[in-house]
Structure formats: structure tokens, C-alpha cells
Length: 237
Image 1: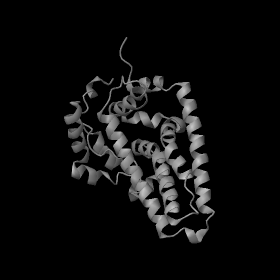
Image 2 (image 1 turned 135 degrees about the vertical axis):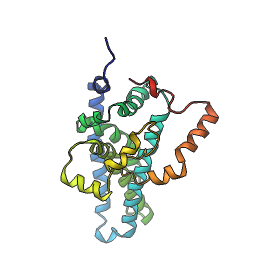
Image 3 (image 1 turned 120 degrees about the horizontal axis):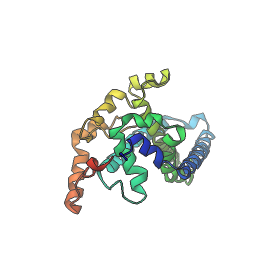
Image 4 (image 1 turned 90 degrees about the vertical axis):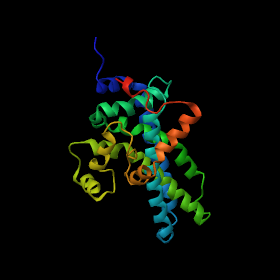
């Protein structure tokens, strides 16, 4: 019997248990994010100043950097056969190179559940801060919530960058460069899939690619471990 296509393999690997975890993670994300936003909002409009705007922008920028780092790591290291991480993260990232449209066939829960789970430590950290205690604490809460919201949106924005049709509002955001643009992201899908890893907005890609940031990390890791970057790409089916 022939090997499964990437889309069927991905579907088969998404179990009912995984869906239950993703659903719970989404509910938990909105509860924690809402609690944090309400605490800042309760401070009043006079507290929402330039520092708040800066925290939002920095958090959104950090989410783009984070998306690129995670994307690069699972594109580059470990194996699809690595326990837990292999099936949950490595294989989906690398199969995406073979079937870029597969993500457009995922529903809201499958698309966004894992990122909601990943934001749990971030939102917990925000809940541990009291935004009314100091300007620094308020800045920290706003930054962490903006970071979490950016991480939450990443897979959805990535999905829209591959979709043939998107809502008009999303297309406007793409055209304005406020979210990941399809034309920008297409650079990543050129073999060997080693550029433009950031997939929230893509704003960090020119800087990181220009600095050779990820290549420098790869050389350092290879020197320490003798591991070969992207060694398993050809084995992913």
C-alpha cells in the first residue's frame, strides 16, 4: 500500500484527545486573556497612555520573533520520530513544505489550539502581576497580553497567507503589511525552506535574514552537538 499523502497523514495524526486538549486550551486562553484585559481596562482611560501603546507594539513584535524562532527550531532540528514533540510539532511543520495548502483545511480548533496552549505560561505570568501597583507592572501586563494575542493569532494569520480567499478585512490588513502577507511568506516556501521563518507579521524577517541570525545559531549548535540542520527533510513523507 502506498504512503499516505501529507494531508491524510496530518488528519490521521490529529486525534480526538488532541482536539479535546486544543478545545480546552482555547477556552482557557480566552478566559485568561479576558481577565488580564479587564484588569488593565479597570484602571481607566487615563492610564492607557503612550507606554501602553509601546507595550502593545513591542508585544506584537515579540510574537513575530517568537513565531520565527519556533518555526526555525522545528523546521531544523529533532526528528518526526522524536517522542511527543515529533508528532505534535516536527512532522506538521515539515509536511507543510510538501503540502502548503493543508493548513487551509484545518478548522479553527485544530489551527489555533496548540498556540493557545503555548501561551499559558505567558498569560499566567501576566496574572501574577498587579497592573495597579506600578507603571512597570502595567507595562508588563500589557506587553505579555499583546505577546499572547500575537502568538494566538499566528497560525490563523499563517493560514490566511495560504488561503485562496480571505475576508475583505483580512486582505486589507495583508495589503497594509499589518499581518503576514502571502507574497512575503512565499519566500519561505522556496527550497531549502531556510528563510523568512517569522509568520505573525513577517516584520522581523528582513532583519534576521540580513544578520544571518538563524544560520549563526545553526553553526553554533552544529559545532556543539555535530547535529546536521534539516537532516531529516528528505525522510518526511
